[in-house]
Length: 214
Image (cartoon, rainbow, N blue to C red):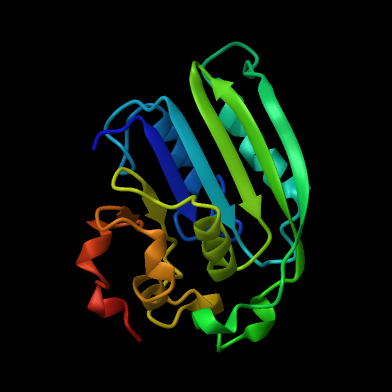
């Protein structure tokens, strides 16, 4: 463990970037991780590979770009000095039909499997730290399934962060129990950190916080 290459996923993130939302500004947590602070990692990483996703049509590329751009600014430097990007891109995704044999937990809203959607990617450096940030305009089930197919999964030193709208049957369909069941559980290592606003646990500890179950 103690790898300095960290992967982070925030599924169904909504507008939780710098203020508001389930973590009251999740990018503050990312900024702490860049310095080896906070619940994500105790070590200063050499790279952060970050994935956010949501199906909210009001979140557009410009919203994401403005939010993520701030990660590359030095707030304590004169005039907020910005580090340079290496890559900025927008990708159009064309998915096939939902894989019925996988029994993805999407029965409550089959329309959330998007056949055509987009992703935004920003790659750069901040004070020697490599950062790759991707936002997918798609459901967390679809994004996890896609990432698993291409071999991008979460290991023992990585983290999934969850806003407080994740419940057993959550607001907007963010059902906490689904990530602990097949096929989505294949996305995680047993020691992947599962982080909420108030708790940090390991994936193998399973569903928790029974007081949050409605």
